[in-house]
Length: 503
Image 1: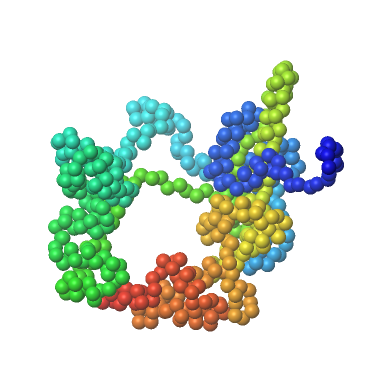
Image 2: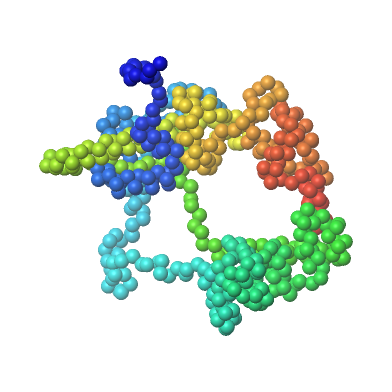
């Protein structure tokens, strides 16, 4: 059969993700910090994008030609113990955090005599019109490397020893332990292990004691030697830290050969030591979580759900600049500006859609978990992504992206939106299932309240929970207990008995 060209007409369907849809999906899963970085890049790359000086993000939809459907940024939820009293009502006004400072409040911050009293300061030589520079008067926090180099210059005089010392200082981990073996250090520096070990012995006498240790036992030994408390009995105790962790007081007393009172004193000395001596020099800045959604109680018993203005991107499209360039520009300029205008409009619309979706999901979570917000973790309901997705008529993947790395500030604290999704455990009475988070909390409460003479085993906890209508297996209790870092019943019994003997 001979092959010949021919024309065929076929009809098919396919799902195509446009660049605009890809951008919307990407923005939806970004955290507030990542979103700020992304918007900053777009502001630098697109001449038509500008920062919204109004500061409330209200120009998002207006600049995209969608002013009528602009998000106001707040919703009111009226629920009592999970029951909705009236449908959602989109509020007409956005609460501006800056309005919390009234004129009276600003007046209270001003000097009693006004500006004139401030001006009088300069006459006396105490004020020259500039605010005092307090930063120059604040002592800089000590740096571990600089602290050790000062001691190195005073302790070691040979250039070769100083070179080895600087290398070993740079090999310390964040806790102050030496992250390299003596053999590897000698091989790297091209010297023998005895020379490196001699320098290391001198470095281990530096302040604070415990630095340059190669394990926990050596760290504790160095600190005890600095206090002149490393005797033979203490050496045996340091060598059996496993028994100390297990609170096996009887075996420790036997191998150390000391009285119960002496053993208690030795354990107290070890507890007073610092297992991570370098952390006091740690200068890492803790990043504060900025909530994307703010939840506040209403006087009528409902909740007000609003987006945090600090997390709303404040951008708009400069149509005036676009018109000016296109009026007298070349064909290439017009084509470039048209492309930039389309990109800017899509970005603003995607940001607006992201804000609307976050607010919608957070509002539904407030309705679903109303009992938790009113009564605590014991009333946290089992919830999966599908429940929220069906309620707000969105796909589960969308809800998953919205709840990842997004936080809500509530009267009970700041939570990630993912926190409210937990699996459920069946109820023996046929009532609503219990959340796994609330069951873990109940297990912790039971164990915290157990007396030393009646330690609850996992089997006993299962019986108590079943008596409360919670069907749970023993392995599940053990899994939850391990997740809470709670030791077994036998270990808890030894620890509490040791505490009783100590008193």
